[in-house]
Every structure is written in C-alpha cells, then in structure tokens.
Length: 349
Image 1: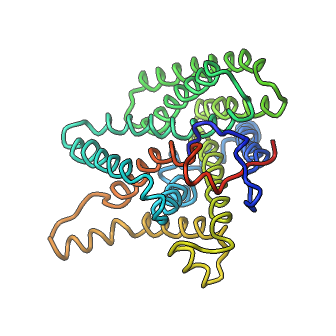
Image 2: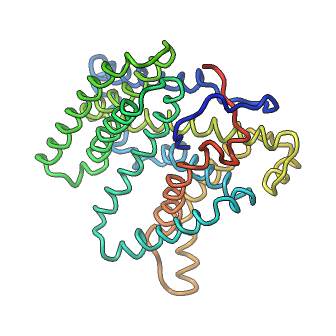
C-alpha cells in the first residue's frame, strides 16, 4: 500500500484487528541487522557472505517468490475480488489499464527498453518510500514542506541506488562511479535534512519513525557502496512488503472473519482457512506458480496453437501489468474516504 498520509482519528471500535504503529516501526530492525551482517562478513568472515549472495536479487528465484511479487498479487486480489471496490474505482482501473497497454505495451515498440526500465524503476522507488513516509507522517506530524523535503530526498537517493544496482552490468565504470557519487551526495543531504526536520516532530515516537526512514535509505546506500547489492534491496523490500501485508490482513480479518461476503473468502471459509491467512498464502502460491511455470505454460500453449512464443509473457507481461496497477491503485485505495478504509483502524501510537 502507498499511504497518502494516515489520519489517526479514523477508527472504529467494532473492528477486531488493528494496524499497530509499534509493529510497523519494529520492522526497521532489519536495517541494523543487515549492516551488522555486512560488517561481520567484511571484517570477520573475509567476504564469505558476499561470495554466497547473488549479485542481484533478481537472480535469486526465492527472493522473487518471497518479496515484491507476492504483495503485488495480494493487493490486486484484494481489490479485484470485491465487486464493490471494482465498482467504486471502475473508471480509474479502466483508464490505468489502457495507459499501461498503450505506453508500456505499444510504446515499447518505439521507446528504448532502458528508458522504460528507468521510468519503472523510478516509480517503484517512489511507491516503496512514499508508503513508508506516508505512514510516518501520522506520527511525525511534519509541516508539509518538511514532509516533502524528506520524501523527495529519500526517493532521489533511492532511485540512484536502485539504478546503480540493477543497471550495474550495463554501466561503464565511469557511469557507475557517477551514480554512486550522486547517491552519496543525496544521502548526505538527506541526513542533514533529517537533523533539521527532527525539531518539528512533537513526540519521541515520531522521532524514531523519522530517523527509521532516513536510516533505511542510508543503510541501503552504505551496503550498496560496499557491493552488497542483495542486502541493499532486502531492507526496503522487507519493510515495505510486511507493512503492506499488515494492511491487507487487517482489512480481511475485519471484513470477512465474522461473515465472508465475497466468493474468495466464502470458498476459503469452507476450507476452514482463517481470513488472516488467505491473501498471504494465496499470493505466495500464485507467485511461485507464475514465476516457476508461467512463461513455459503460456509458450507451450502458444507454440501448440499458433507456432509462436512470447518472451517472458507472464514474468514480464502479466506480473509487470499487476505491478504497475498496484503502484497506481495503492496511491488512493487506502486514502481517507475510500471504502477499504472502513475496515482499518490503528493502534500503538
């Protein structure tokens, strides 16, 4: 999910499960753990961990199954399995689907692949960090200028870190060094900005959240600069994905635990599967099936019927479409006034 900024007064006593701010803050514990792992590996284990890790998270199928794609599929399942949500957002969903087909589908015939990749990378980083800053806004209570200063510095640094990791094999040494230098400069400015902005935070808990988001970027930059690319992506991915699932699970428990009111949860309730486990389990299973067998199955059908094949029809086409829809829809489905927010309450602040 990508919070626009959570308003705390919106609560409903009838809702059984809440999204805990203390739990969300605890997820940032992955940051010092990863930095400690890097330091131990460098100074004690002679880079044994670095040699074991893939050079990019995208090279590790288990990483793709556990992070990124599952919460994207869960988000789309949650939205599209509820007729009332689809009806509410119908025009936006149709409009965005057409845009994706035209810009990323037809546009790929004319726009260079690297340009499309950079656009998608920027959107990905913005989505991930906007979620964390949007949630923190509720407890940090920064003035708008300070909030957007922190957000855009984080996103800017994050973009160059992301590009430095995923485009490293196509960058010249001079380009790679330039990307690292720009990300370093932006990270330093972010740290300085956080020192300035912290005086506007009214509570110690908000101060923790403010620095947690900053240190998430700083730590990602540090391990990236040390070439621990896997750890650099793991930290924001884990924090982002589990945060998103906390919203999805809370929504499902509060809407369906007492009375399942859509086809998916009526089916799973007959199997005595708790509402809290439906989306996490289903999204993990679907991710595994799509990543491991999707492309081969589609190409088998296409080869049999039409004697042709499509390159990564599922892992790039279908999952790419779902990812872009996720980035778009999560920017408004959890906003105040959305029908999904009726099933969300907050605690631990």
